[in-house]
Image 1 (cartoon, rainbow, N blue to C red):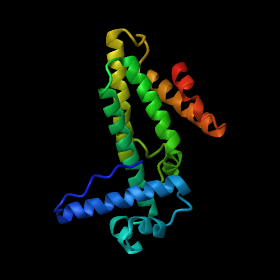
Image 2: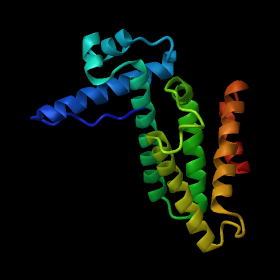
Image 3: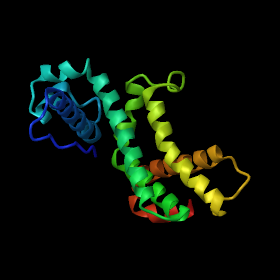
Image 4: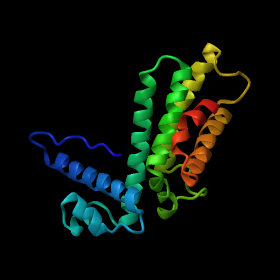
Amino acid sequence: MSRMKPMPAAPTRRERVEHKEEAIVATARGLFNAKGFGKTTISDIAKGCGVADGTVYLYFKNKEAVAQAVLENFYHELKETAQDGVDDLNSPEEQLRFLAEHHLNSVNDERRILELFPIIGVSIDNYKGSKLYTLNKSYARVFDRVVKAGLSRGVVKRGIAPWVIRDIFFGGLDYASRTMMMHDRTDNMSSIVDGL
């Protein structure tokens, strides 16, 4: 779930504005994840933040713009927590295991956030070059660095293009996540990660 920075003791106007925007995004993220986009209203978001409906519109044009900010927040946090976790581990094996568990947990915990892509109009035609594409690439680079370290240490098999390894890894995780959710197999994560 979204982590907000604490408000400074004597905030500037800009810091107050940024804090309010973060509060709106964090509240919307929680509501979208709990209720879904369609069942969440701007009034729900405003009430959750303790502001008037009109205040939300000062920061975001519409609910779709809030959804865009929520997705950006999700991917930014996903990358940051992935990088922090990898930095705390020494071997590529441990790092890959962490990334697999991190991805499965993140996707399973906030599945409805990823359902926002079609709502904000992101399709295969306009995804490349978008801010979300850039954030997703930033997240994938964490994995790519681990694979490069694994290649240099002989842990990852040579001869396979790193992008193929990445696609198999994340594709397998995403497919496993769907299966876990559909068949209520969330207790099976360790065996999925071990297999991968």
